[in-house]
Image (cartoon, rainbow, N blue to C red; front, top):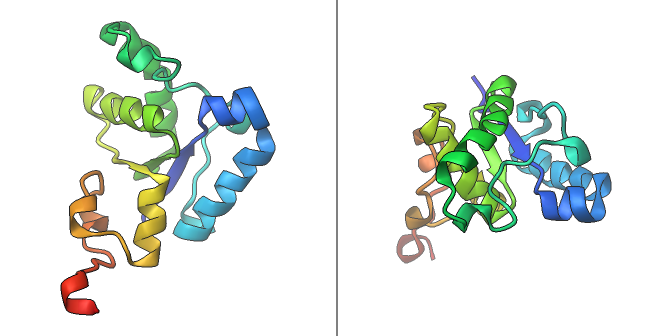
Length: 148
């Protein structure tokens, strides 16, 4: 069985700035790293994707219950893909979606896109794997003291 991934479109750069062209670039990178056959897109997606509910300062605003209630839309959307992982290119999206997964018992890991890029290059250190599931924690472990 292959590991399946979906990707969150960050509001600031996709919906509020560059639109679908940058969302297409994000998908190109993700598919290049995980394999096109292992990518499942959310519906809706790109410029029409749902906000995770953590941006615009909401993550730090102190309205946790409201943020989690709003975020249920995103959690349900991610679960509907059947993906094993959600990739986030934005730190606020990562933190919010990670909390949503735990709060709603969804149990999908959320990973930064840079984590997968480094993993694919074989340069992700053992201490940089906190958000990886057990299925990816041992992939391409780089030990500089033994491999140089």
